[in-house]
Length: 432
Image 1 (cartoon, rainbow, N blue to C red):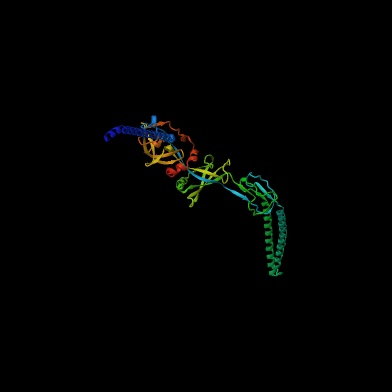
Image 2 (cartoon, rainbow, N blue to C red; image 1 turned 120 degrees about the vertical axis):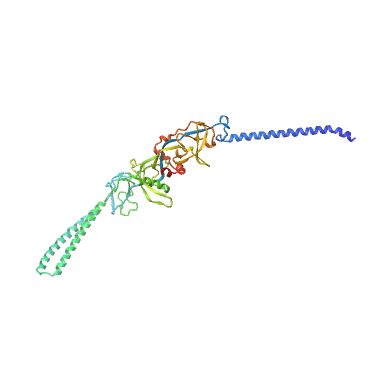
């Protein structure tokens, strides 16, 4: 009986087991499909959010294909060595005009902002009190001269009588003293006359220098004294004008070398943004000590300033042309790479393959840099697209960028020859 029952139950059990196995396989298949769909979606999302510049090259420039780059040839040219500093426009002379006497202002003949020359009238102070003082001094002089003359006549008489033994010696001595006293009074009177005349001159206040008159500090009718806190008016010389600027102490040796050789160094002033040239001049002097708090030294340059583009206390950027390197090997700054070998470039050979070439840098500006060793003129270097290159990689060279630096004027280097290149390469090696 047990055998019969087992025989009847075996087919049913087999069907159940087969059905369960089929559902397991179906469920597992769906799980695999879901996983594949999720993986495909993730790959597609990653491709979409990846920047185009970082995607692996495909198609013609895919794996094993040449990398597109931009190349530029090394060239021979001139490299100005420029020292850059910050400066302030400083007038050669600034005069705060003060009154040397007290009195009431009766005239103000100048106009604010007027250009004046030495001796041009600025302010007139009422001269009448000083004219009266002059007349009084002149009257005292006439009186004392008369007394002196009378004393001299008496002295001559006493001298004659003394020789005749008619007067005492004491009387003669007293008369001599009186003559000397009257002579002193005459000199005092003459001094008072001169002082009164000088005060009359001081009533006419004139410009002591050539320059521009500022805003007037007093008005017509004001009573002024020699102790006016703001003065009467300020006159500032604008032509020529100087700029005081600073340079790091490390640049002083190269600068001193040029100065000791007797060279006149050109200086260019630019505006606050370092984009507009304001004026050109020459270096006038270097201070005699370094500021220990900043490690800089002050220099002074003089500018003709005929067009008055430089204004007192104006902030300017200064470019000092130290010297110019001639027939130097130049490449664009973008061609210089930095890494484990140090400073190097990718050189493109005739087979359109690149090789790593270690180079020694010299002076540079924002556009070009001097190669002192490791590269020859006319050799092609990679200036764009070097981020994925390796030594020996094949490249496809696009049209080289035009190098306008060869035709750029010296002022272009004045304008841009600062922080970037100066910080990496400095100006000292090139200047030596």
